[in-house]
Image 1 (cartoon, rainbow over the protein chains, first blue to last red):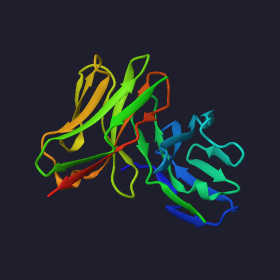
Image 2: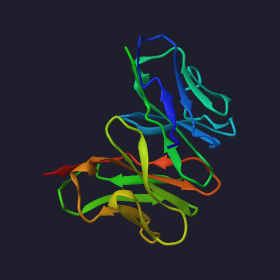
Image 3: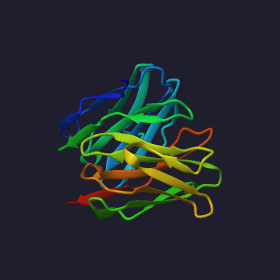
Image 4: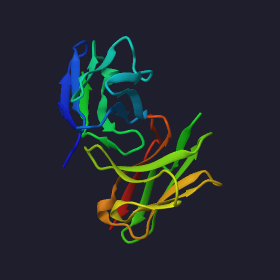
Length: 112
Length: 113
């Protein structure tokens, strides 16, 4: 049963620390998305990649967030330095153009 | 600009009653429309989707939705609610040739015994 995996599932850190979240998309999927979910803002698209190239990262705060795909099996989202307002659930999703998008279980980030 | 509006952030129904979750969209080009469900502490799971063709689409767990272009709506229904349907439901929109999904703000469904 193919699924998107994310690590860690939970992360508690202190303000100012670096946070790295990882995602393994479903094998063969060439489009990867990063979403952030909060009570106030709902689901926000942060960035997405096609064939490992960033297509749109306009949803990300550029000064502190970065997203990369070092290879086809790994996507990373990094926050440096982290702030309390970054506390949220971060979802990775993968898919193929025109087909369904599959979400991972999310990383719940708490920044103290 | 494209947008998705879900009417009612919280909906309560009795077990066995009809479930109706409302979604309206705005799009200048033909939309692809989706309903996702999110159970507590989990990611989003696709319930059903409309791309082209038949306007009444059936999904998993007995849910269905009808695309009504004239009303710019894509409401989600289920004839008889089950306790296990309690979750948050998201309507989403995409269009051909793009990879961006626009999500509504979600509707939390509560099923009363």
